[in-house]
Structures are given as structure tokens and as C-alpha cells.
Image (cartoon, rainbow, N blue to C red):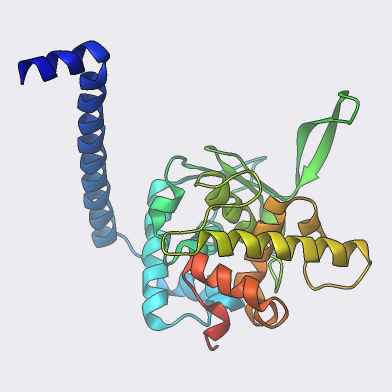
Length: 281
């Protein structure tokens, strides 16, 4: 036994084993602490019903939720607001209605995935309107071009989500900047590659990838051919944008997505563990 111990120690394997168990113990402890804190938050905080009614009245896709789903969404919103830091930029005052509206739309995609999906970052920055960012792009000759771009929303890997409140207020069927940016967060902060997020546990990973890639090729062909589509042509810019834009449609124009893109809809239903087209209201 001593020889085994010495062999492990000399090879460095022993220290790696110890770190593994230390990390596992730390993760279990952090998970316990997070659960304890959340229970305390839910015991002491709730969403005012009048405020919820005002917010939900402007979000048609929330009205179809069952009572049980609505109750869980409210809890997620309470926890989201407790754990994330929301800041107004350029003098924007974040009223309760602004904060709750953004939180509701951010939490809908994770209704059955859980708030831990958004672990690893805390910031949400809200501008009054579109905001300007400096970007760089390298052309085919290797020359770097710098330019300014006006954006309605942006998500940073491991960092904040940035939103234009004016564009949040423009939410309608097929368009939702909050869901779009938080779909990016689910993608970029989880498993997967630059194009698409990885399939969730229990899904057929090959089927998920094959469906997304096939749907993206089909959509790009439709855009290139100039055919009308209810999906924003911006989705053809990149596979990651296709995923985010289709996520918008999945939650805000679900019946049309299920009709026109049935296999893609089925895969999104498995990924998000929701069936919004099957809801009434």
C-alpha cells in the first residue's frame, strides 16, 4: 500500500486526486449554500400582483402559462432579481416595472432548465435606447477594420447582458431582444461550439445538431433566394444568430414555428423542455 502511495505521490497523481475530491466537496458545499440562500429569499420576497399583472399584460406569450408554470416563473423572477445586478446606463432609471419585465423575459427560457443555467455572471446593463459599440473585423486579406455599430442588445461570454430598453418595449410576435440575448447566454456559457449549443441531457445529440444545421442551410437558401419569411433575415448572419432568433420565435410565435419548421420546433421543445405551441391563452 505504501508503494502505491509513493508511486502516486511521485507521479503527481495523488495531488490531482486530492484536488478532485476537494473541488467536488467545494461544489457540493456551494450548491448547498446557494439552495439555502434561495429558500430564504423566496420566504421573504415576492412579486407584487398588481405589478405582475401590468407586466404580463404587455407580454402575450406569458399569458398562456398554466397556474403552476406562472407560480414557478414568479419564483425564478424573484431569485433572478436577487442574484443579478441590473444597472441603468446614460441616466436611465430602472423602475420596478423595468426590472420585472426584463426578468420575466429572461427567465421564461429557463423555466424548466433552472436558474443555475445563468451561473457565472451577474450583470445586466440597460440603456435607454440603442447603444454604440466599437468592433473589429478582419477581411480576407488579413486587414483589420474598426467600426462603430448601433445595437439593441449584446451578450458577453462570462460577462453581462446589455439591452436597449426602447427595444425591449418593442417586443412583439417573432421579435424579443431579451429572449434573443439570453438565448446567446445559454449558448455561449454552456457546452457546445461557436455555432450551436450542445444538446441537453436526454436529447439525441446527433439529431439536434443535424436538425439545426439543416434548418440553418434551408433558411439561408430562402433568404438568398429573396423568399419572404416570418423569421428575421438577420438569422442568416451566423448559426449562433440563427439559434437566438429561432429561440425568439419559439417563445413568441410558437404556433407558426411549429407549423413551418416542425422538426426544428420539436428539437427546441426538447432543448428548452417546454411546448409553448401547446399552451392555450
